[in-house]
Length: 186
Image 1 (spheres, rainbow, N blue to C red):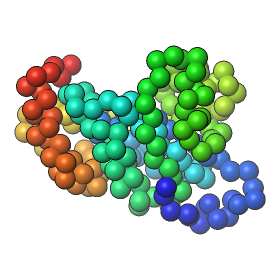
Image 2: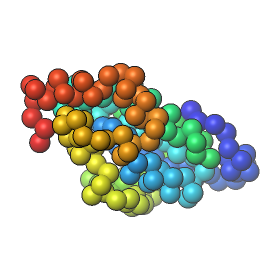
Image 3: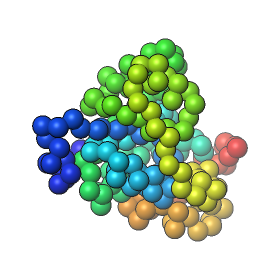
Image 4: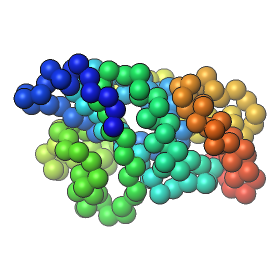
């Protein structure tokens, strides 16, 4: 859990907006970080769901759920918001997906997403959905970052410093290179 903030302390006793934002974060990058900074200005607390948490060690999903929790948690320390970073394994039944997510998280009353399926599923449960703000999606892309890692190109400027530190700590670039020799990137 993140730190208790001034904003949070002022809201105790009032109705609080706690939002959910889900992503795969393979890896967490500056595009995600800018989106979360904008969301943090609109709500009191934020739940960041690490989607497909059970997936790892493939070129498209190289990092474990725990590694992604580290990336996001270390990056969000600088923000003035209380946050929760929660790994979320996939459930392959859309009819129960929302209740599955709710069973893993603190209560929330708003969901940020651009995914039509996610918006539809939460709308059916009467939970408010808002479009996620977008930030330079053509530049900030997990696929592009992983491609750069495989090809020994500069990638560190596309992620928060804390993420580069985690990737270096776990030898993530070599993992992706090794995986790419046995897997296809696209």
